[in-house]
Image (tube, rainbow, N blue to C red; front, side, top):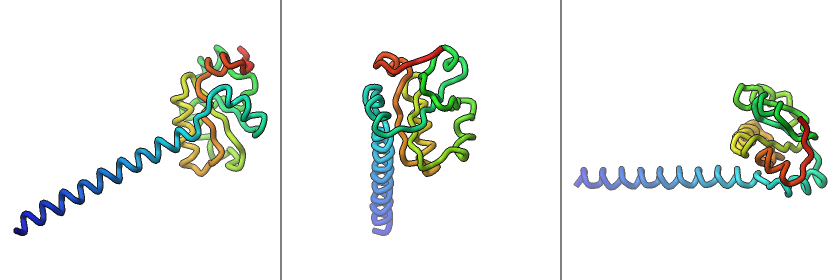
Length: 137
């Protein structure tokens, strides 16, 4: 009888743990999706809510072309981005992009963890160019 109660209790605790982990994962996914906007939405948004544009790609990628209005180039992969977070104003609005939107999503997550609230992942460089965002080489 005691073994059976122990087993039922253990199964209940494991089920609760799995449900809680899934809920947290969905919350994080939803939070990341909330900050993702399309290139055309970015063009409308930046007019309404000016902010700081950050390219989080590598130096080689940046040298091949970047958004003309970029304020900072802070490479996520070499640590430039994370080491610069303490010097950025948490009250400003930030627009992040990379090659595909993956690294800029990771960068947005890092910023959120550090207390930044107004962060937008504007996706990939080529998508921005294709939407008419001015670029430079």
